[in-house]
Amino acid sequence: MQSAVRLSNAPIEAPARFLALEAEGAPAMKVSVEARGTAAPFRLSSSNKGYETWLGSDGVSLTFQDGILVETRGLGGDVMASDVTALSRLIETGNTGAARRIVDVLTGSDHITSMVFDCRVSDRGSRRLEGLNTHLVAEQCSGRDIQFTNLYWRAGGRMVQSRQWAGPYTGMVAIKAVQP
View (cartoon, rainbow, N blue to C red):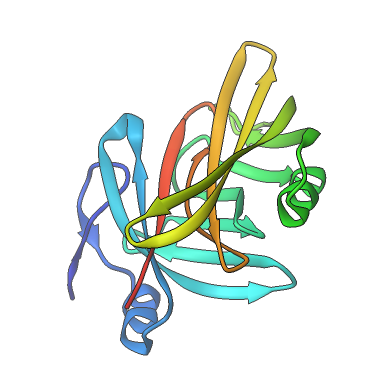
């Protein structure tokens, strides 16, 4: 069995499901946790009604709604759920404006707490990204004692790269689609 890169700094064996997805040629992306200085490959595990769940080589999973991170598992202090309906609508339609983001986070004492953020979505225009014409959208959010800015690069109706907040324990993650 292959050794996996781990987002939490400790190497483990790649889970069989990840290896099967890799062998099947499932879509791939690279995820980096900025504060930890770690990165790992991920493969698309399932897709249903605008939600995609991606599995990492270390067993971590990330779920996205239309390219927006809504759940994490295996990172510690995980995002259990997020309501990003208004944000998703703004990004999909190419509009700017205000959106509320609600994030349910697992605390260190295994309780779920809800965090509410008021966000502003702005258009940052066209950008060239590794030979690809993209459109950059920024989401600036503020809540009680926490502020963050998410960046979304879109091309052809899909998110091709992003920098997103993954909760107060993980912080920012960089996500990049990997072309075969």
